[in-house]
Length: 324
Ligand SMILES: Nc1nc2c(ncn2[C@@H]2O[C@H](COP(=O)(O)OP(=O)(O)OP(=O)(O)O)[C@@H](O)[C@H]2O)c(=O)[nH]1
Ligand SMILES: [Mg+2]
Image (cartoon, protein in one colour):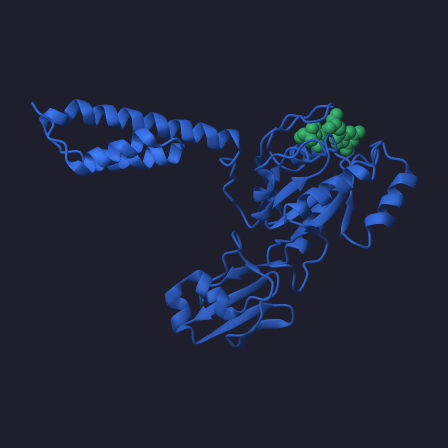
């Protein structure tokens, strides 16, 4: 049976043959498949086109994976925090100490090669920690800055027993700043619009093996710039204080919703950014509730169920009754 191919099809076919770039070849193939006359005489050609298209798409996926673009960690919980630092500073050990994740930990550098998430429980909220490969002069994964850019905050881990201090830490700071994700202690009021500054807490690790003098030097060097924690995963010293520091750094508040005339649901708080109002909270609960909101009552701090206005700014652990 004759195929009766149209001039448009022949033109797309010519483009396919002339194209070298994979995405041009794929675009031409997609067009050929879309406009090829659909009848018995072209069935084999259609199947062949589909096969070639599938192969091209698969090759494309492999290429992207090699460049690491496929490493995206779906955010879970109240916030996502990335673990950054030079090789061997204890990032994976910290993830293992704070979450149920079981990352590879080893005494040699470059153990971690891909992001690994774990959930940190702090009181009644869950925060996602994402362990990352190290950043060093000789190595930084291409996809890493992108992942940092999407995070809510970062922990910058520092090994006080490292022979390369403070250069190894400076390399991490410089490479991320060069990639336009500067690690900052305080978020600036305004910054270069091309930059995405990331709120960062510095975590000095391995205190069980560190010399007092080295800890003091680090505190002096970075204390003015970053909130700091000192921890050991061996003795577990400082881990609880680190959780508190992280929670504070995120600048979030927990709000419990209380249906009128009933007790509050204390099991699962709404987690909102610092500065959110009663009206913002209503919006989070339900669009319709926000539209019909008359007033709210708040319990927390000095308030024991008093009426508050729509623009009342909620505080951590407030209990709110919305009236529509
Ligand atoms: N004594 C002591 N050793 C630690 C501590 N934390 C980590 N280590 C050791 O430091 C080494 C490196 O730990 P990792 O957690 O693999 O370090 P990392 O930063 O994830 O390393 P890369 O993935 O290679 O970048 C391992 O031998 C750990 O056992 C600590 O608090 N105290
Ligand atoms: Mg690691």
